[in-house]
Image 1 (spheres, one colour):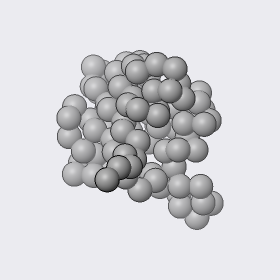
Image 2: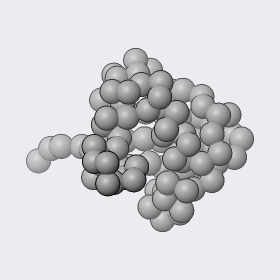
Image 3: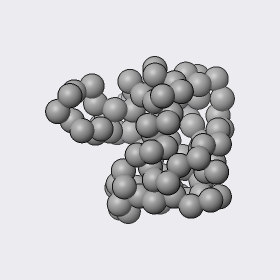
Image 4: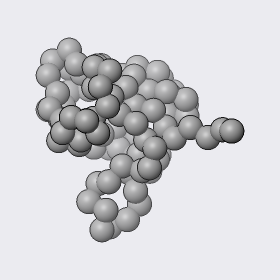
Length: 93
């Protein structure tokens, strides 16, 4: 199991700040979140048939505190006990 921590609007969509999900990599984890919570999937992925599961701009995913952009992106492997944090785009100014 992987511990998933959600922040801000993502928490509100799933009505929880933490979940446990069985997944071998980030894409599988995000796909499971999309299956369970379609509204969350709509906010995670670009809504484009040509995007091939591309994350929306400014959605940040961390594995054990490291941004997946500096690992293997959506192919980043997960192991039992890993912690994944998912942040929505933040607006402000």
